Length: 175
Image (cartoon, rainbow, N blue to C red; front, side):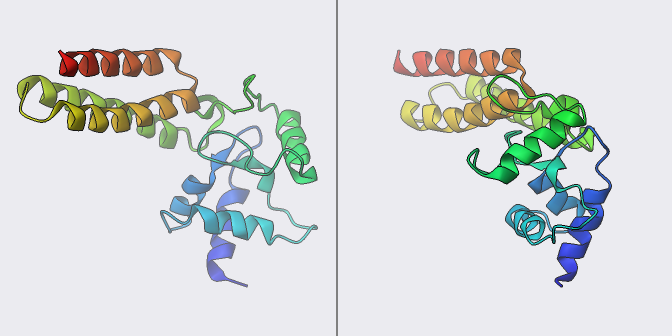
């Protein structure tokens, strides 16, 4: 068997009961950042009689990646619920609450906030230096990242702040 798969399984065995980790975090902890898909392949290659808690691994949006029509998705949700993991009405798990290791998810939110703040500061200093359309496109990419991160964290305040900042900048660029 692939030695990287063994490292993945070792990491997944460390996820505590009642917590979840994303495919990307598992890949990084197993020594291959960016190999999230390989984590999925490794978990799908597990034999039925194994001791790896595969159900504790979800996608970066805090959702179960398997199709809701798939029996495994229903089983994964049931196993997580049994361990005390709660799903938001939209079906996502709050990674700020249930994510393991928790500092991995705090860093992602801080990074998006910092990037948005730095961009807005740069924009304020260089008013009119770039084409408004280019600024708006660039800002929307940052805002999308902040909104996605905020929705993962279920932090409506961050999402609202990002939207408000985008509207102000775009409105100002049209003026």
